[in-house]
Length: 134
Image (cartoon, rainbow, N blue to C red; front, side):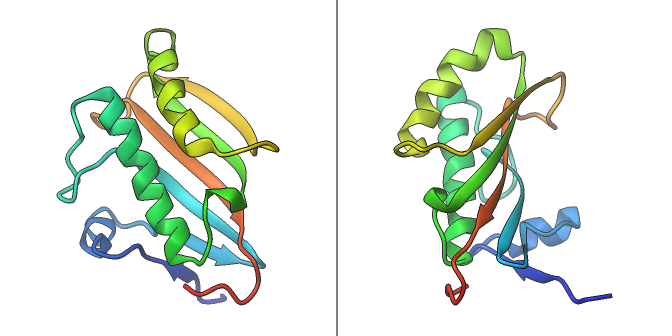
């Protein structure tokens, strides 16, 4: 088996080790990023929905930067939302601050009933340019 090329954002290794997963793995020029939520440094949920979504994007962007990329390199997005009918507008208003200019990545939105105390999660696949730091 090939050794996984794992990308860790600064300061969050303990959280990922505690929960036993990799924040992101590089493979053949792609970066597969685990779902990111609006967790504080200790892993607890940010209670305010807008702040939670911003923190999820900030956590995602920290991983992308650690891999030498940015949200502009994202090609595919999956979002998970608890009770999307009541939360979508708030979430999408915040997401647009991070989304960037067209052309936009592909998107799949999934309504869920539970996210371990969170209301929003974002998972992406990015194409990171060859030779990027990380």
